[in-house]
Image (cartoon, rainbow, N blue to C red; front, side):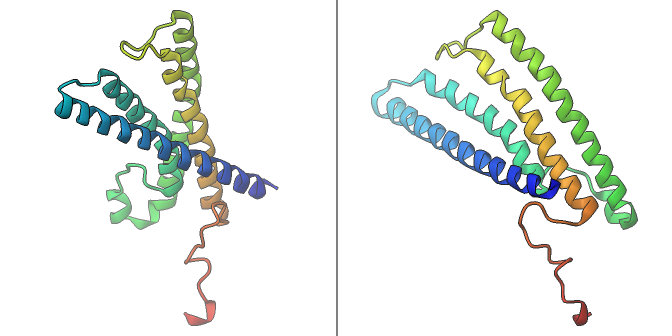
Amino acid sequence: MLEKTLRILDRILSFFESWTLFLTVMVALVALFANVVMRYGFDYPLAWSEELIRMVIIYTTLIGCSAAIKNGTMIKIDALVQLVPAVKKPLSLFSHGVTLIFSFMMIYYGWQIAALQAQCDQKTIIMQMPLVYLFALLPLMGVLMGIRTIQVLYYEITGRDVFGIPDNDNNADPEAS
């Protein structure tokens, strides 16, 4: 039951991550292209495009953390694992535990910051977009990171793949060795 739930969550999150990251990056590219054309072609720069691109960079960084956890591409120092391979699993479990703590902190403190922004009703300088939308990404990122970390932990502890990616180590032919 847990594995099925994790697989369904993976499909939903993968769809959300892929499409929202794709769409936001495409919007940023169009805005950047329009700004370049207006600036160098008509000598009239678009101030809003720079603000939009800044927000897209923040968004892709925060939502991209979830995808990075799934793909195992989060920044890590593995010098000790290279020297002493026996500590790989304990260090990996420790790393995932710290990531879970971080994701819970992002949910808690991100929610507080977003609520404060909702009370202050601050807006961006040029586009006049409420900053609460940008700060609401913090708890969302915490939730996504927490779910992805639980999925990866489940995979590492049980050896069962919840991402639907074949594991070459587990699927190897036992008679071939």
